[in-house]
Image (cartoon, rainbow, N blue to C red; front, side, top):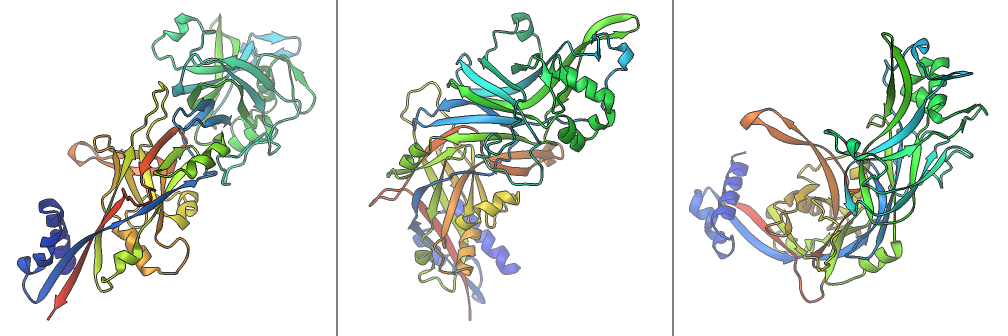
Length: 478
């Protein structure tokens, strides 16, 4: 314990005071006695890199995406289609039937019904003309399974034959809503899909619209509306929103909301009200992405740089020079290893540039799948997180000694020995404590499913832009 503490202090001093080059050979003798003489050495090695096609990634994210955009830097097209299910509460209820004034000869009805896809922000142009189709699902997409970014409900047989298929054109700046509504305080931008045409359920029963179907199903069995599993399997499996045409915008969907509107009498007054069902993280919300894979393959073989591109696009793989790092240091401890990844500036002049990935993780190349499948968090031992620094125009991994030592202790001769993958991620955090004692804790790390793209310097024959700086230590007893 004493020795570890001394080493830590020396490393701090080395990084903070000097550049840890020729002078490090005498640090140990100058700071501690000769009983446990410590020698500290530093060296720098070249790291090679290449672009790797990500193909598909686990589609677990808190944000949905809907739209189609061309990346102005790479000229590749990305399409996002969104699937939503709706959550019900254990105490959900409609007003008593005799207080509902909207009726026809068969009983209560909905005056109208719609789904609103609320979005927080978007890429591209808010007045780009887009086309989508909202499909009713035949069955719910079940929990407890791993779904990937290329999971297509339509291709997998989840779309109900002869079910709802509402087609509409839209722009993110919705001119079909009155200015008085859009200008209201608290208004949240949304894409509206109206479900007001006659609807026939799986039993052949026809209703004047989808909202009436839901209201009468509630009348028959309110309990099914208070249990999520029963609601999804018996009443409403969900909807799939597919982009059919247009390009130029991609909305970040916060939530989907199913609204049923009807007239209600209370205290002698009749007024229009609504009941709402909302998509939440308690039920599945998924985005299905499709990329121009031909173009991605072309980008992956470019030289002079590597790519980080989302969603489900391109990763960068680094090959750590493990043989060089170990040469002449078999009895030394590796206390620190630092890598700085410089970004190549974008030369495109488009007004709709994709963003720069904010966070990336470094993981052993053969552990990428298990890291995300098992919902792991960066542990600063075998996985590390770096955040883009705009001032340095770089990502810095200050100390990846843990991952280097992992390879030192597992020299298995495999093709992945010494190789690490850089993966853009979305990071969710929570603040714990208050004031000066408050800390930010990472609660979830998932694949970044937003639109981002950047180039990293490297992957150049004869010139290496990536270095790993390693500090070794060794105790020399008498």
